[in-house]
Length: 170
Image (cartoon, rainbow, N blue to C red):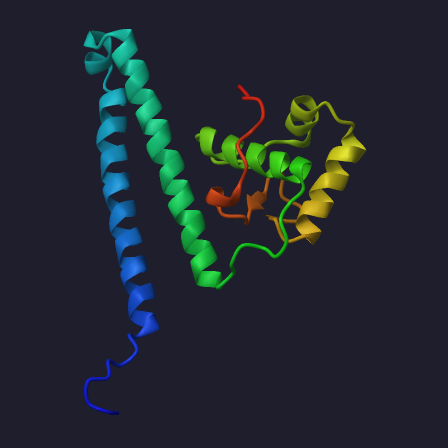
C-alpha cells in the first residue's frame, strides 16, 4: 500500500455497529414498555390518573410496541440479507401492504388482518383478496406461513410503503 492511502473500512464493522445499536434500542424500548405497562396495570395508579392521561399512556405503549415490531422486522431482513423486493408494487398492492403493516403494528397481538378484514376494508370479494395475497407473495412483497391463520409478514421496509389512502379502525 502506498503512503497516505487509507485502507477500505471493514464492511462487517458497520453491520456490527448497526446490529449493536438496534439491540440497544430494542432493550431500551422493552424496559420502557415494561415500566409503562406496570403503571397501566396498577389499578391504584390508573384510578388516580385522569382519563386523558391514561389514554395517552396506552397510546404510547402501543407506539412503543409497534416500534419494537418494526425493529424486529428490520433485524430479520438484515439477517436474511434480503433487500427490498425488486420492482415497485402497484397502487393497489401498496395499499394492501400498507394496510397489513399498519394493522399488525396497531394490533397488540401482532397478528395480520384476516381475509374478512381485508374484504371489508377494500370492499372486495373473497377470491379477489386471495388473488391479491397470492400475487403479493409471488412478487416477494409478503411471506405467508402455510396452514397458519393470519401469518402474513410484509417484507417491504416500512419506509418504502405508501400511506394508507383512508384510515382504518378495529
